[in-house]
Structures are given as C-alpha cells and as structure tokens.
Image: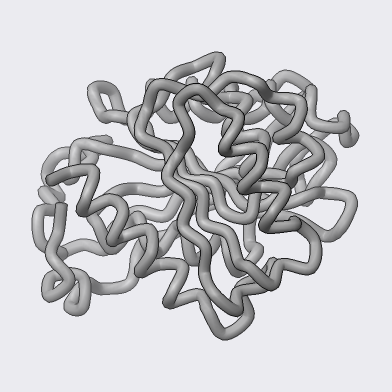
Length: 232
C-alpha cells in the first residue's frame, strides 16, 4: 500500500466507459485506472493491478438520482486509485445507459455480482475490494455475503436494507457514518452493528451528514486510516 507522500504525487487516473452484459441487459461501467507513470504501475502489463487489488463501487439509490458519478462514489474511486488500485464504478439497471428497471435491491444485487465477476475476469489474480454508498452500501454488503471479497467498505449504509441482513461477512469491513446524517440515523446503525456476531469497524464522523458536504477529505482519510490498520 502506498504512503501518503506517494499519493500526493500521483497523476490523474485514466477513465474509460464501457458496457458489459448484465442480468437484465447491458450494464454501463466507468473504469478508473491509476495514471501512467505512477509509483508501482507497470505499463507493460496490460490488465494487471499494480497493488494486487481492484475495487468495485456501488452507487446510491437510483430512484433518488443515484448514479456512478455521485461525488461520494467518485471520492471512493479516487481513494482507491491513490492507493494504486483500479476502481470499477457502474450504473445499476435502469440508470444511465444500463438496461432494465429498478428492482428494489434484488436485481441490483445481481447487477453487483455480475460486475464483480467481470472484474475478476478482467484482473485475474487480483484481490477484490467492494465498496458502496447509501443504498449501494447495502447492496455491497448483500453481494459480499454471496461472493466473498477481501475488503468491504460501506459509507452511510441505508438502514432499511441493512435491517434485512442478519449475517456479517468474514472479511475486514468498515462502515463510515456521519452523526448528522439526515437520511440514515446513526443510532439505528449503531444498534444494528451491535447485534451482529462479528461486527464491522464503525467510524462515526462528527458533524458529517449524508452526502458528506465539505467532509469528503475526512471520509477519504477515515478509509485510509482503517486500511492502514488492517494492512499492518
């Protein structure tokens, strides 16, 4: 994993839009790859992940404007890029150029699993990290229980879908939650976490609200600090 001093000198990532086959038709993807010439990047190894890991990121609720260009999702992608990981963002069914219609979490979980499978084929041998924001955080958790990942990062997870999940994945798992979140009640998240047999790490950002206005750097720092602890 890169040190903070290394991440400060990294060039802009290369972003590519593609379409893959999904359970309900085509799924639209954004692939963010660490920029050429960055520390640890071997340009001669096409399809390789310099950090040995690759991340998939799930976006917030489609019926409330959520998509793969959401600023929190973008921040997650850049956080992973700064660590040397390619990041795969995607639109759930019915969003942007992705085919299909909203399926209240069931079909969206299948979408996430399809993207995870494609990502594993695209970067063979790389360990898969999974992340999500709000609705996407709950979908990421669901998907991780069906297809295990190496790291799970869930930001302001939608409690409605969390309460339907009684199990916890075996992988190291982080929840980042603002204590002023107007959509996800921090105490409800704390209560749900306390009931799990293997609870995740819960980082509560004081003053943070749902979309982390003015706090995206703090969100990034919380994720990096947790990853450093897990990797040490």
